[in-house]
Image (cartoon, rainbow, N blue to C red; front, side, top):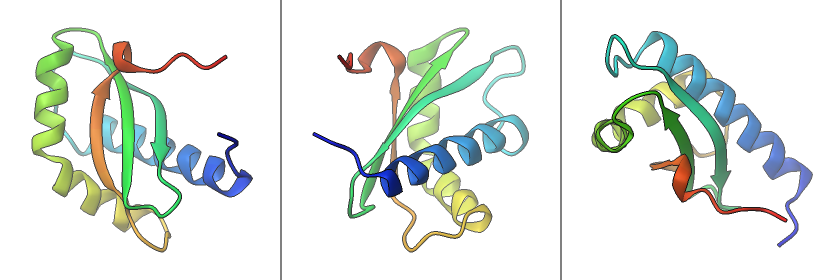
Length: 100
C-alpha cells in the first residue's frame, strides 16, 4: 500500500514527540533505554502502532506503555497540533513487519 506524503509527515511527527515524551515525561525504568523505531497511523487517525525497542525487558516495557497509553496520548495531544490524536498501541520491534 502506498503511503501519502501527509501520513508520512504525521507518523514522523508522532515519532518525534513520543521520543521526547519517553525522555522527559514517562519514567520507564532508570537503567533502561526506550527507542521509538516507527509509527504507523491509520489514514483516519483512529489508531497508531508504535514500534519500540528497549535495552532490557522489552515485553515488560511494552506492557507498561500500553497501560499508560491514555496518559501518553494526552501528552501527545498537548504537544502536537493534529486534528485527532490516535489511540496508541505499543509493540516490540521484533513484531515490526519487514518492508521490501
